[in-house]
Structure formats: C-alpha cells, structure tokens
Image (cartoon, rainbow, N blue to C red):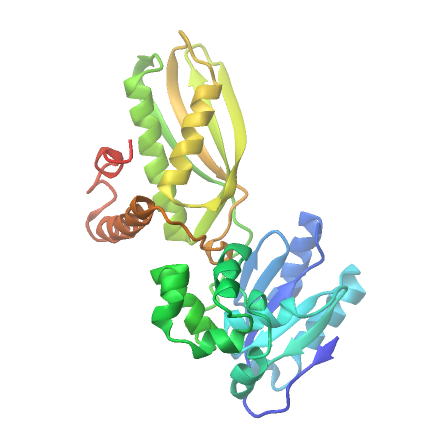
Length: 333
C-alpha cells in the first residue's frame, strides 16, 4: 500500500512498524538502515521506530526517503515495513496503523491532516487505547473528527484532565513532541548496600522503597517505562537470589513499581538470611510515549501522580534527595 493525499507542504516525521515478533537482532539491523537516512532515529521497541527527516531532506533533496527505506529493508533484510509519514508523531503513527500487512507507505501532508483524520474511527488515533475509546463511544464519539469538534473540557470530563486535553489536541492534529534520538534501551538498575549484615525487616524494606523511588525517577527522566522488574538480593557469604516479574502495564510510576517490588521481596521468603546488598532493575523498557494513559476513578491515585510530577521538578532543581520516599508514601502506606 502506498498513498499520499494531494496537497502542498512536506511532512518530515516517519513512524515505522516492523512485522510482529521480529527478532531483536533483525530489529537492530532495521534501525541501522534508518540511521543511514537520518541521524534522528528514536527506537520504540520491540518493533517500531520514529525518524525525523528535516535534516535528511536538506541533504538528500526531495527524494522519497520512506520508499528508499522500504526498498532497502526488503532487499537487504527481507523485512517489509509499514511506514506512516506526517507532520507530527501522532499523525505519522496513526497513518502507519492504517496500513495492512505486510507493508506499505501512507504519507499525510501538513495541510491535509484534519481532512484525513476526520473520518477515521476514534480508536485509530494513536494513543487512544480501548479503555479510553469506551467512554468516548458511550458519549457518541465514534470518529476522530467528532472528537476534534467537541470542547476540550468535555473530553477532559470523559477521560480525565491531562489525558482528555492530550486526546483533544491530537485529534486536531496538534502534537508538539519532537523525535528524540534513542537507541534500544538497556535495563535500568539501581543498587543499595548495607554497612553490616542485615536481616529482612524495617531497614531492608526502607532500602527497597528508596530503590523504587530512585528507579521511578530515573525512568521518568529518561522518558521510559518498565514492563517488568527484577529484584536481586546479595547475601553474606556470596550467595544471591534473583527473580523477575512482569507489570500488568508498562509503568514508571512509583505506586506500580512499589507494589511489584514488595511482592518480589515477599516471594524471596527470607527468614534468617543476612543481606549485604539489594538491586532493583527495570526490565524490557519502552518509550513512555507509547504507554496508554488509563482512565481511573481513584482520586487519591491521580493526586499521587500529580504530586510525583511536582516532586520530579523539585528533584531536578534541588537534587535527588530533596524529598525522600518516606514523605512520598506516608499516606499511601
């Protein structure tokens, strides 16, 4: 499938979808082909990526770089791609989602965005998940055009303040997020050691809570979310224990990380083991922009997310230890 609305102007953001279950090594090779077109490539593992073509167009001219990429991956790797091109991440990602397998290109020019988005089902808008689509359908909003036409305040009432504002803006083609160069993310790890051998108890739980706060802040600062957590316990004498569990949804929020970290610690079944160190790893990291913002009626949870964002700003300004975990979780516990 190859298509492009007839219009003026030029879109520069490419959203690329590789085949499902693509081996990681092949995915890395696709990213290398993308890097040959532009230095601004943002990996969205496990099988997607973004490319910003502004600089590349100045170098390569008006050549259709999306077609060049598709031909290269087909001939060199045997991998067909679904490529959406648009003036923003949302438009490009929505376009790539409209292409049937195995591959193709759909380009949407800047002056065609609202016309093209309007008739699409609201579920097709990139970033709208099933839980967000349901209240929109109940309200009678079935297309992106209808979502764009209703007041932002109404959408906020249906989806929540921040999520509603974001959905309304993106339905109107507004998405200021830049493509941020990012290679395949590694795991994020934070560690803590004890000055003396320590039995499981208040000191260990406090250290684990501190690691949760550190890991959450690190992930949010990187713009990532973890699909799983690994807890590593080091014992006196050199023995160790390690276990990994998946999160229900990718997250960088301390509430979610804390609950799973505590379950991992409980699974260790410690009795008289003398601990010397802990490590907490965020596994299978994904770009936070790909994580759907779920609707919740839990006001206290929403309040903690707002507080978390405010605390992050304080830490960036005054240092990571300006507010400790005991302050953050006193009411939650």
